[in-house]
Length: 146
Image (tube, rainbow, N blue to C red; front, side, top):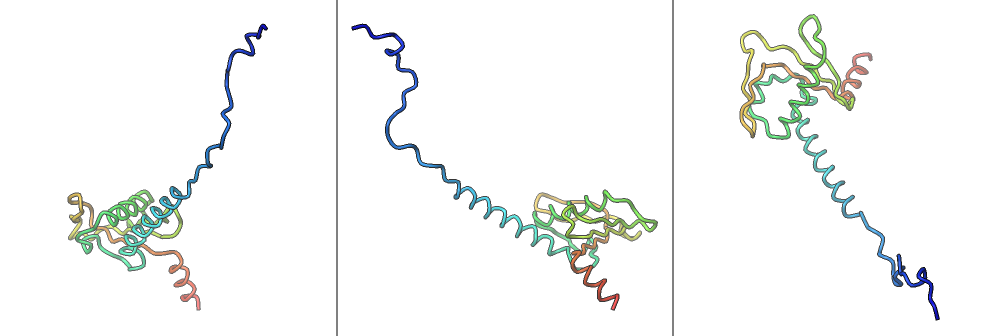
């Protein structure tokens, strides 16, 4: 009996048995969701020091923790990227549209301040920073119109 060569080669053979179980990514998704919640809580806590408290001189902050420093620098970056009005005040909204940032220039007698940070000192102008949550601003405008 002669067996053709084509039938003697094995090639890709299907192994009989159970297929592998479907991959479960639930643990990874839960970890990412928990991480996002932690980061959001840190951002909200840091913004809580600035938002809705009225104008704050940077010199009144004295020291800032790592989360507050990151948010402070982000707010200053947003404000300093906007044009000045005739008094030198800069107004802008954050990229997510939740906050209005108002940055007024420092008074002449104390133009510079040194803030303590976890990674050293930050020397910057002693701006007057006001961060207004837009929902509060709308409510105040509604009350003013009554």
